[in-house]
Image (tube, rainbow, N blue to C red; front, side, top):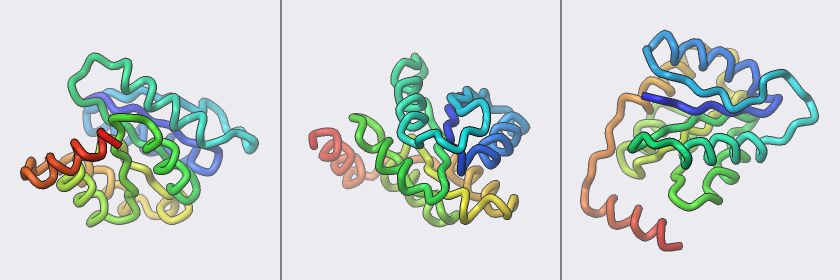
Length: 149
């Protein structure tokens, strides 16, 4: 699976570790930046880069992972784009739910909460990647409603 990554300065170091982890799991990774630590960068730039790269991808269901300090800015920015369903991955349960129920195509991670705990962020990322959308009609209906907003 191809996964697009993006992070601002507060998520930069975690992004680098996630990129390596995803490679070890056998995923193709496209790093949409930042390519260096820049304390003055803005999360909105990297959310847009990841979303636009995903939308340009011919793959049926590309995915993205976005990282900033709180994770919230990335969720808000990514969800501004039609067809994007970004979920906030602060726990394994949240990651499972956002895939199972909302068929999220972007996982937003809070580096402030996760950066110092490799086991926690790895479990969250792996759960999100491994959890299929359950396809229940009520969930499909709600996703269609989101696309009409």
